[in-house]
Image (tube, rainbow, N blue to C red; front, side):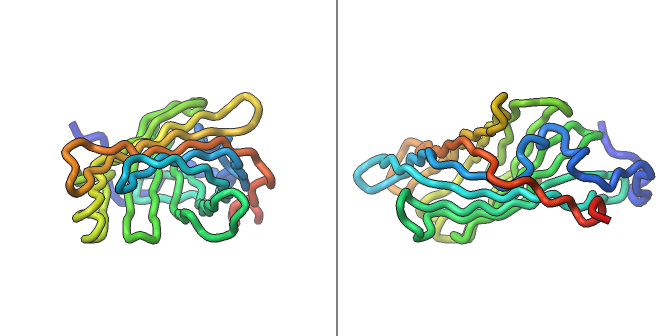
Length: 210
């Protein structure tokens, strides 16, 4: 059964320009954050390696977005990660966190400068404080796309992230990226987790600021 209307052009008339009031389960993630106790478990030639990391992530609201009748509210984000005590880049990531109220759907898009992009999706309610998103390789929607070397050597077959909005105002994530590594028969679970503390409030989206 098609969940979309026959009219694919008409935009919804009921739109609130204040994104911060309409982020649903993403509300607790808006702002600028820092996490100092991140843990990455990554593949190496001699086996899994644990690496501590420090993270700064900025999530700022954008104006409401429509695609015909579809209405989304969201946050534009940039994550910058280093090893403790160092300034050299360890990981960089940009994308969007999106909330579609009518569908009860949360979407995360992500792009990293290794030539890889993904789109993960999950269901949530407007007041959810824990939700999980998944992207899988080879699907027509909400998938994973990598450059030829990554497909050859470190093929990503699934990406999964669980977000928890904590009672103390922090939020945490737990990621599991499933890799098929060349020369290995069993998949490798490349995991990352951290807890973020807000260091600055979000900037209102342009429409709300007016």
